[in-house]
Structure formats: C-alpha cells, structure tokens
Image 1: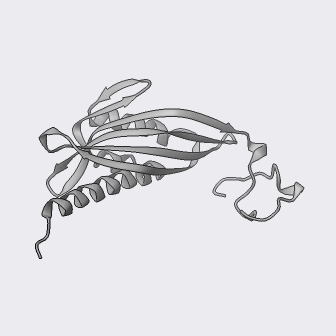
Image 2: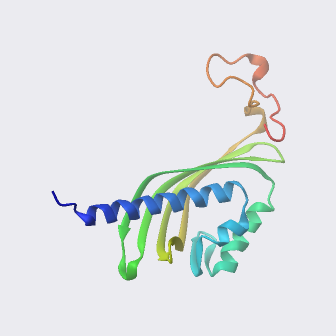
Length: 170
C-alpha cells in the first residue's frame, strides 16, 4: 500500500497554520510582545480598519499598545480554520476569532471577527507574512454584570452574586 504524500503534506501545513494561530493568540493574551515579533517576517503586512501597517516594528508597536493598555486578562479563541495554498510557497489561513477582555477600569469586552492571514516557511518555522484582522462587533459588558471567578459557572444565580466585584487576577 502506498502513502499519498500530498495528503500528509496538506495535513502538516494545516496543522502548522493552526499552531501558528494558537501561538499568536497565546502570545497576545500573555502580552508577550517580543514573542509576537518572532512569529512574523521582517516585512509583515498588518491590515486593520485603522489602516495598513508594514514591517515587524509596526506589528510589534500595535501589540505594545495592547500590552500597555488597561487590559487585565485577555482570552482569545479561534475556530473555523481553513488553510489554502497561495503562490510562492505561502498559505492563506482564514478563521473566525472571539476574545474576552477584562479591564482595570472595570467591565469587560467581547470582540468577534475574522482573520485572513498568510504564512510562509522560514527555515524550520512558519511565520506570518500577512496578518489581517476584521472586527465584526464589540460588546461592552458593564462591571455590574460580572461576577467573581469563585462563583459557580452552573446552577442558579443567587441575587447577592450579581454585581460582585471581580478584582484583579480573578
């Protein structure tokens, strides 16, 4: 029985794309700006509604702004990942994202949208050569709607639990 190496290659590339997306989101959540700088090529394209940016320094600057913000906790999630070949050894990674953030000033945000990224192999690693972020919507959650992490995530809510302060690191 022969093995179809093209299937194995497609699976390896898809896994690499998923891993790169997950690594990116963990680094953003950790506010690891140096780590984010290592997963992009020097002339990375960054596209957001605020306008295009190009280059590693501009990419890092965006995430330094995030790291310097009042975001206490960020938790990114990605789904509906599809990896497709492009020209010149690049691959497109289309996906949907969802992120929750809590803020020092109180409250939280839910943000959802789509990524349309390109990756390229550099040595033994895969890196983003384009990062395109399309935010669909952002929902603001007031502090009084949040409860602390020690409240059960299932079962009935007690009236005294609603509006309980979450506190830093909760």
